[in-house]
Length: 325
Image (cartoon, rainbow, N blue to C red; front, side, top):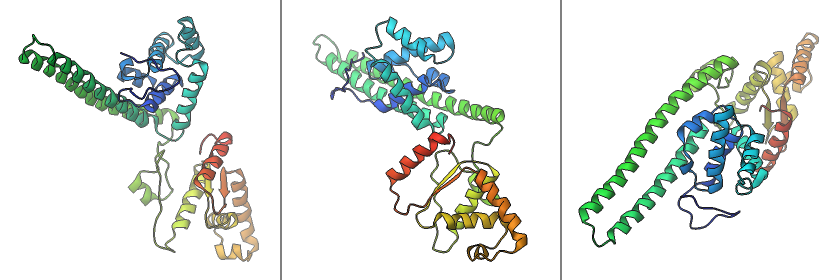
């Protein structure tokens, strides 16, 4: 049974995860390619809030009719049924879409959505334990009922939960297979690799490239070449793969970083560049490299005391201009 919520969350709600519910609804509203995977693996009773149940059931109807998320038709359907106000209005729909878009920009959708589906099942099963426990408790207070009947009913409840857990595991395996096939299909049609290669063959054979959402830490003792490795990878990304790169440098200045990148591509010694000892025949290589850098999508921020919030705000501004980063 659903529990109506009006602009605030009742502290007596059973176990739930509002964020997971919002993200899954948001993916359906965003007309994501993985929407069918969501629809095939969840049900309205997995949602705790009534407004999420309403949105999900009406989205299912929209997908069945139009095979995609048609937001104007969804709004009209909710308005016709006098449900638009209950779910929070158009503002709620826009907010759910924005939340999902901000998350999907940083994570692999297939793996990400499976994680939140697992969360919904986790809390639903906990709610079932509470519900069935109350049922068993009520049965125990009935005078004219045998302990055998209570035991039989209790066993049935446990079996239902066991069946749900088995189904959940089977669905998880099926999703892994479906995701594998989907990734292959997307790669063939886009003609690109899922992972980004560093440009170092031995390193790429070990890591299979950088995956979306990964945090890569290059660590080592001082003077081991950590910065040089990072700059060489950056050089490969911006010039060979033509990707957008944003560097936040805490130690080196913009000029020092550019000097290194120019030295790598022009085959001119870094010391000669910094000391401005450049031979006439080396100028051509330097000019060619500079022209390539001007056309590249490289940004460098050498604000030495940059905070996490500063980095976050700068990236948001950058992504409004460059969709891929």
